[in-house]
Length: 358
Image (cartoon, rainbow, N blue to C red; front, side, top):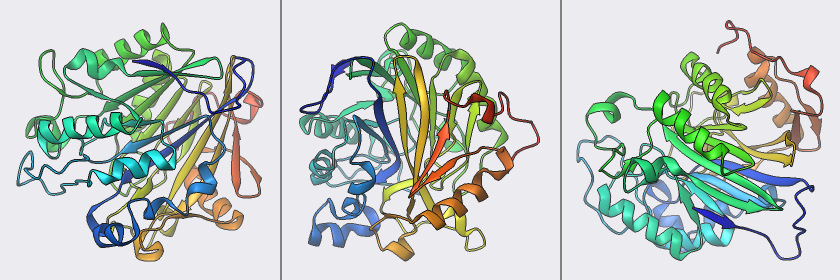
């Protein structure tokens, strides 16, 4: 699907910078149900408006279906998420343009729950990508035109554990589901998107919950960059992970949580993992110029379902602790970490060393 997106009063020249804000796992339900009913479904988002206000596109990972349908895909599935249909309007009011559905909760309530999700998003004016009625549709992604630039969005999920053989999650030639992360699908989808878009952003559900970057993530990241991705964005871990620049391609291994309404399982021995990233990709007609990061506190035992941006001191400490093994450098300006991509390529290693792994 291809659409145009332009805020009132914005220029349309392709030469201007385009600001694409990317946020992580979002789920307005579960542990915050009583608060949502009392204060409204936008309650977990209200302290986050400031850090996403300056954008042309706002894209996130929707971690669960929006549906009133309660029958689970499998009653033995350990974690089942579901959002009230009123959540769609709250996400639209917040400003989401598109949401990635390629994750391990999209089909928690089966095909019916997923169809309800698609309907709710479309009725609220929010685009979606990463799933489809068949594999061709799931891997086709979405193209959004803003500022004269065509932004291609692809969503993929790494098959793992029960999702590889127990739960019926992945799209096939004839069955609905999530687009799988494998060499055939990923390379084909990126190459096809390159013919339709000026900038290709690949969203990937991968890695391990509440852990750092795995070597498998890094292997996949190199392949995605080689196949033609301009930006790689990870989710699933629920914690912020490192940023790498691989041959000029920024890889945000995991954005962590955004507004995610569960208690979480954060390790008290690793306090730097209680944060998520709000990432802004700044690009022009020549490609990505830089990535700007804002850190947000996301541990609901601390923020009580109201995640919020943190100050410059905490931001710098969290950034340096997470990124030190990867050698990623940033300039700190107020509450932002700015990572040069095209402007200062000498500051970033072309290919990270094999040993720099958490």
